[in-house]
Length: 288
Image (cartoon, rainbow, N blue to C red; front, side, top):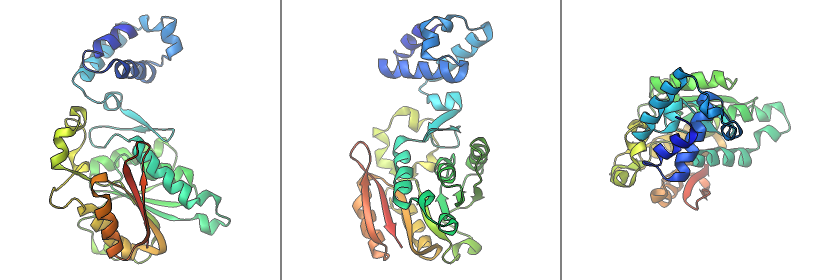
């Protein structure tokens, strides 16, 4: 099977442009062939073993398994992250959240080393993409990352090694904080989270490749309490954030105003909702 045969096969399940993009990604990531290589016919020169692997990849993709899981990696803010079924696939809107933090805080541009030694906490780290990227952007910062899933933390630790940064990973359930963590006073300059925020009523509008393959633990929140994780994190932030420190969330646009009101009721201020590249209310920041 060559590139043209591959994308035509996938076009039975995907739109043509997506089928071509997925096929190019497979050839480049798994077999090291660029588009230029494909144009001069190197895709027709794969070994018998490579052809067997390519056929297996095509079968998985035909079942709508995300190409990032099939290949075992995804790109985020120009870095490569390992991914599997235990972690969400990093998304462009989360890249925008990281960029919002970078633009707002400008840690790397602060004058003194002490100012740059910010303490950052990422709650619900998954693959570690937020924590690791912030650590790479700000080498002097001390970055901690929590997740309830031991399997997710294993992936995150591998990603920290892959990207040559130090992050303190801890298995913590933010809804049931142990006393030694729950009462930490004024520790962090930044708390960031992309928590579960999809309500079950939204399932019918979701793509099969998300519902069937990505971890529901990291996706869904009860319909009757969509702010469950935000409330717990914001409550923790009241003691754990330093005075005038910042809280950042990726959010569900359906509940942006409710979240703003909740944060205001908890005495957070300078609350700002930010839109993503598609014009959706996708991020919020608030000051302690």
